[in-house]
Length: 438
Image (cartoon, rainbow, N blue to C red; front, top):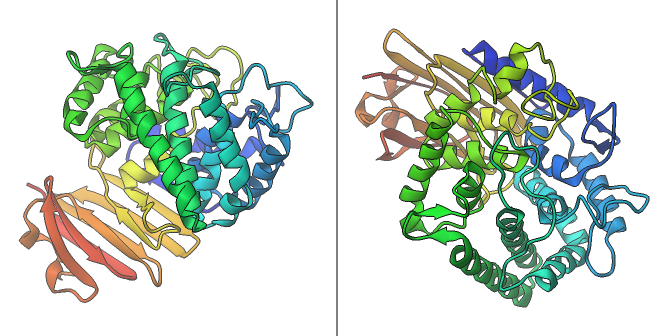
């Protein structure tokens, strides 16, 4: 294992454990959907669980090999099947951007988490060919092919929203790969393509009068936020509408497998980890907790318990625990944890959370607890890296490190107070921050 997580909520610990077992039992040579029935390399399941895998285990070599398999299955047109490897099935059903984007997203995650540029470089021509294939299928910048938000509880979301959003993200990844390879012309071409897709997406799906996207589902709203398609000026209202959509479901999730990743992360990234933690902590339908209450030790295929009871496609919540509760977040601008953020969220009545992660640069630890009106946070930063640490108190003068004012500690630099948190830049080493809770 590369990582471990534990917090003061036993239910969340059991969900994390179930995700870990589901991932492990579905990575046997290739990433599969379930280990007992189909045993197929469904591309959507694979990319939705990839960040969980990279934080809990060390699957980079398996992913690099499997991306070679995707390259082998790509047709000259750029088309990909929904399962890889395949004997021919999956080119006409089960594919589309929401699944095929594994070909681009997993190499991006390998770059972000491991600093690996080789997979992007090795498959650069294929990545371009895939985005060009989507362009050939697009109508006025909108792609309406492939599966939609699979296995929703109640509310369905049309495929054109999610497929177009992945088209946008794929164009961005090709632009990044081109920039890394020094291909300025392609970098401009695909960055311009992404900008055009964003404009088309908002013209098609955004309703200025209500500030809703599409049908206003949790998936539609969180997709727009998570994939970076909402204009900055509109984010507060779109976020408010997303929170309202969650409240309408009595604090429960109402998405399929795509929205399950978007929803928790969109809320986290926009300052509403409290809402996301409420969703994650539910014990009745639909929720991960309901599965656990029924005795689940792995994740299931359907919210209502139908079909397989060992599926990985709802597994990104495990990565969310690391990011939201322990607060360990990679920095895409400084890949392979050369720089990263530690930003714990004290939500859901939690009194402690711990995560350790063996990154490619060394061990990262975030370990916090609250007791007797005091907040304690111990962090470990690997050699030759830096991190921005968010201490969740607004009075910067009250924060101490090792018993001394934090701003006077060697290796610690005060940055600013932001959104009720005091931010410090720290170098390699282990630090113990304390502050009174008001």
